[in-house]
Length: 188
Length: 410
Image 1 (cartoon, rainbow over the protein chains, first blue to last red):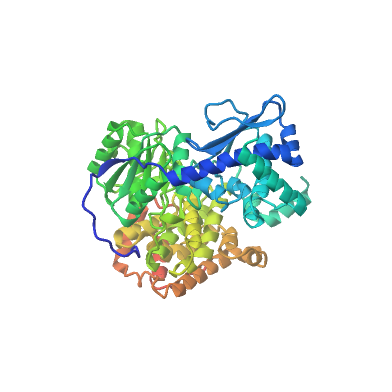
Image 2: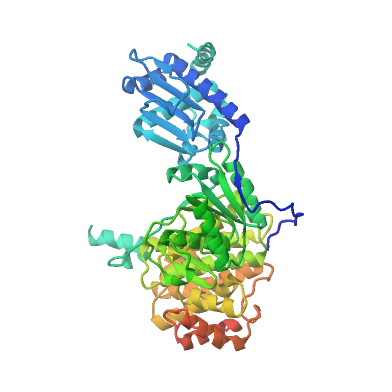
């Protein structure tokens, strides 16, 4: 016997019917903004932080990756041009030829990740992400994301978002943070 | 590997290495998605199997209504619609099954999602069977079936209630029982939001079905190490989490652990033939108008004891999941089987106490008349009861009637 209180019966509906669930506009907009800003911040961090630059240098020339939500975005697409510079390649992850596609299985999982209720490592271990492409390159992308999150977020939130919070000198963190925010806002 | 090394492994995992069969088969097509917002994975899983027009079968019950509400939320942003049929009855007749099969075919559905308890899952399995075999005659099927075509994908939303056979290849509709390993669902979703707390007696009965299934995996002649691991997980989880969930003030984590245990037990049970505990309990439930789990729960320790008496088979491995590793290590190997049964009696008593004595421990408490015993035994034997004969069944029922202790050594 169920322990729920009895509810009044609603007027009868068609026993067979189609349900078109619709969308979640607030969550979609939030994720769009987060991914857009994250893309610009990674672009900026590749010029500001040595570790991020080294990670990108280790990736092959013309490397491009996307991070987005199944089935229809939002997406963040980034790539290296022939000069080795990291550039945003738009927001249409499905239509481009990419080396690595990191896809979050659904919008709820993306919200858990981008509201920092789950770190990237936890999210991966809970099967919320799928990777299409070389796994070592995807790991490099995740490491870059972690570094950028440490720069962008205050320590109290960043500790939730990354696997292990790094012990950087305060000057490196603060100067790096200002430079990355400045470049990300201006977009260069 | 030298002898010393083998001895060390045997010491650690005696059940697995010592009883490794010469050859065995284990088939489990079930993918389990468990945890927070697990239901949100459904559109992705459907896309992975190229399904775009899922049919949702739901019963007109609180759990069915909640499931449809949650599914509507889970399908948002998925660009996929789903079709609901929410008048699935608890006891379907052949006509209802045919009507739903026609609906499935006419509307070109390519997957079934079941939002409800055991009856709805059974109906979905039979629809898949009829669609795969391209027939509307249910009566041509009975017992174990070999499907000529792959059945349509099935996703089940596991609930706290249910028959205990949702994740298995078994289905019972219109008093007919079907089995095919291919009938097991492709995906089982275990979402904490689908948990509706039940009363103590129903919760205990539900757990006893899975406990019986898991114990019978250990008792099966063709047991294998993979099925044993599934069963061991289920038994341990039931042992640890059942008593706390009798309280309404416990977190849903323990209930979630129990549903996982039920699913694991059903997956393991799919690979074995039903044993004496399951079939005798089923016969008792039929004849005595009793809940299936209640019947199985009462007779399980007696069935185990009689099984050991009859076959001289030691159920020593059962001690580890029913007790603890320390207890297992501290018990002489020859006494482990007996101690496992003792542990089960103790657990029944613990559950009886935790359940404010609402749980029946004897057939007398469950109001099963002794005059029903011959009919129960006859039905069980007719259903193909293995190992036990009429005398064994009588012994089990007589002892379970008033909790008369049954010794392993006859």
